Image 1 (cartoon, rainbow, N blue to C red):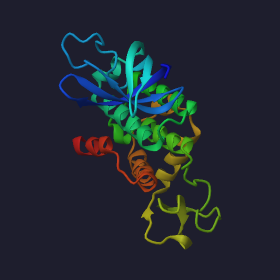
Image 2: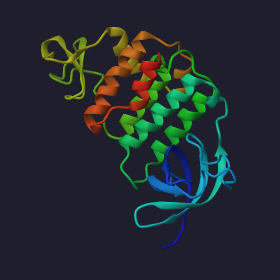
Image 3: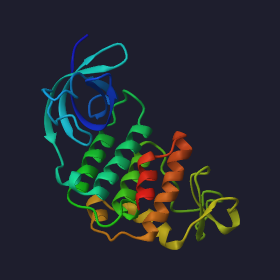
Length: 245
């Protein structure tokens, strides 16, 4: 077996034994993989802070039976300002957890890798207000769903196909619904509909410049429901963000 050279976003990490960590990585070359970093928790560790969550690194990974092992690591992006802002750090955790949940293991997705790195760069530039009300967070999660093949229908009613005014959002049916097709779906305001459409259409840099809003928070709730429907899981980092707020 030969080693793999990859560029990776460190999505998260978990303790293993007394000195090691398991890293959840999203790599440009291999997609989502897990790897062991040996000795990373020792005070004399040779890794320093290179393998912390949200860093972008060039890694050499040696394949094992179920996990890779990190044998070399070089920092590419560290995003220092992001770590000084609680809301930006929370937003980074939401985006990275969502990517981990949406991407299957070992399937290269260069567009998701580029989206993740871009989202972290924008968060490092500063986040206005609470993460749960940030158009940037809404946009990043919506674009991740798009790349994963779970894009909600936002330009017409998912029930009848007509362009009537949307008054509800259905995670099960996958998008907006009109009054005639409304069942037990979650009601949605016109402002949240507009927030959804803007979040999809506009680049992350423009969304970062937008003011936080109740409409973005409402739309994020619906997008989170869609994420939960397709993955069977809820974003713990988003639940933490709401509780902290």
